Amino acid sequence: MTSLPQKPILEQVDPPRSPRETLPTMYDLPSEFPEEPGLPDVFHDLQPQLLSRTLRLRAYGRDRYFTASDLNIYYDVYHPIWHKRPDWFLAVDVPPLYDGQDLRSSYVVWQEGESPFVIIELLSPGTQAEDLGRFGEEQSPETTDAAPASRDSRNGNGNGNDLISAPPNNRANRVTPPGKLEAYERYLRVPHYFVYSRYTGQLRYFKLLGGLYQEQPLNDENPIAWIADLGIGLGIWEGEFEGIQARWLRWCDRAGNWFLTDTEENAEQATQERQAKEQVEAQLLEVEAQLLEAARNLLATGMTLEQVAQLLNLSESQRQSMQADPTLDIPD
Image 1 (cartoon, rainbow, N blue to C red):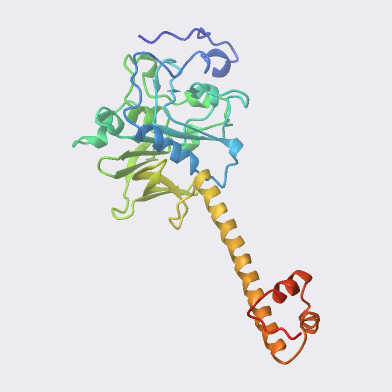
Image 2 (image 1 turned 180 degrees about the horizontal axis):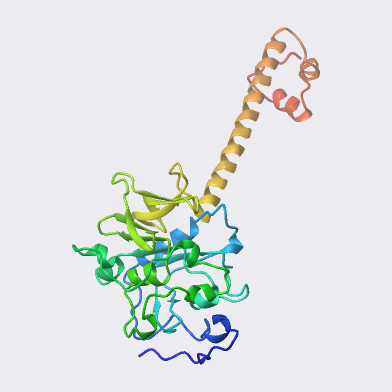
């Protein structure tokens, strides 16, 4: 069984204290529990790396967003040890380091003041039912006791107080934790939720509209989901990453151009520098060839090498090279 957080939950006073002061922190709520399984395969290790390394957010500097994979998200102030562990998520308007100074061991929503903005789950046989929830069942949408909430009410002043407002009815009395879909939709109110199956190559996009997820249609031939409020797209790229050929999720721009990893950018820059150097060398060889041809024509008129060198403004090394060239007929 998961142990209870060591930091006690303090009773509220008047005026009420912030959840940052009264509830367990990241240091009390870890991401590792012995009874929880590890990653199901290597894909679950590599795919999140590619997502983080190709992410480009023009509206957010690198000091204003955080990405993570396989990291616990603690989301309910009424049940502080309840958590979900997405395969990958993005939170914006938070620093890369916890409180700007420490590596995170978990993501505690009432401490951070912001819920994740994007969550991506990679389907596997053991997690598919929970990842898809009602969207994986042939039935009408499940009923729930949660009240719809907008994106504006999901994030407030950033101090964590707003994250416990407008909770689902009777949430404090709930005994069993919700599934992933319900937690993301009703508790965290994550605006953009994706699920991807490497087995079928299918990407599904669920957008929070009116407090409920609605699946967004994607092009079967070229499935790219455009996230307008981030100015970035997510699609399926077939290629090699870390030596493995597969169909990967990857970020792109509006035109569908894939963003590069840091390794790819360095390789592309090195290629451009090599091509520029080769171009300069080719131009120098062309100039040398033109000088040699001009010198040959002038020498054929009976001019001396010194006269040709002065006329063509040849350097001493060029003059010596021409003097040693057996193909040139240089008058004595």
